[in-house]
Image (cartoon, rainbow, N blue to C red; front, top):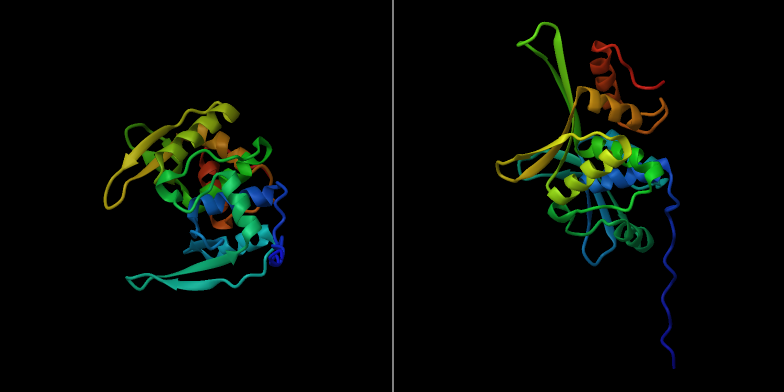
Length: 224
């Protein structure tokens, strides 16, 4: 007698590539966690808006919960358990031990900058300053961080292929080692214009506003 099959897994997330899906995968690659042997995808962030964007991108009505760290700091989290989406993420290249071993991901070229915007909103930043060595010299940098050197190397190679920007990688120590891929001024502005290719792209609005204020100083703006 044949064993009775269990219920067919439900497809609750559309895995057809789109700007929204690519952005969500960027967030997962930056701040997400795939639990081992349980099909659970966890995304934790200090920024509630980031999780609101994540739910919107995946079109899911999942509770945004709270998580307390050992030092009493509160962060937000969205946990989703779905076999089909979990397996899709594995095929893209994510894994349940990703923080230091994450490598190249299978992101369609058409949606790479949406994915990169998700990485940026999760683990990226911009910073700027006036260089006192030269009169009226304003410097700014675009930076992406990761604990995995393989992932940073792939990101750098992908951006060179797509936009002919070189950037440079630095290694930071401390309690845990991480790597930063940095782009100065002209290269950084080139990438930012492609990440924010129109005013309607999903993103953390506070980061977009900061970028526009920074670019305004050098007479530039993001696409509108």
